[in-house]
Image (cartoon, rainbow, N blue to C red; front, side, top):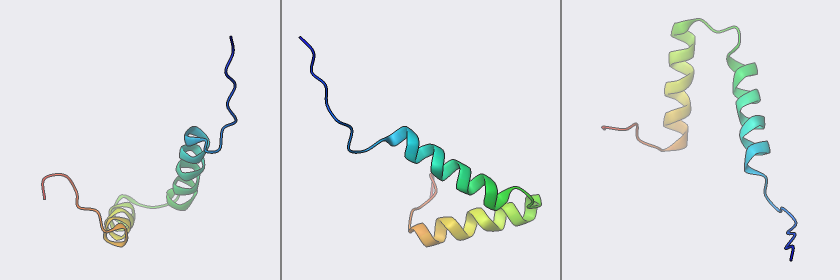
Length: 52
């Protein structure tokens, strides 16, 4: 007996798209620029880093 379900959300595809977008945005950044990028993204997301 087979139960085939149609995917409405593909988490792997979404993760790959997000990873590719971040990689393209940060590919030519220096370490300092990358740190600033991460800090900015964390502030915009409203999430708190672990331990804070």
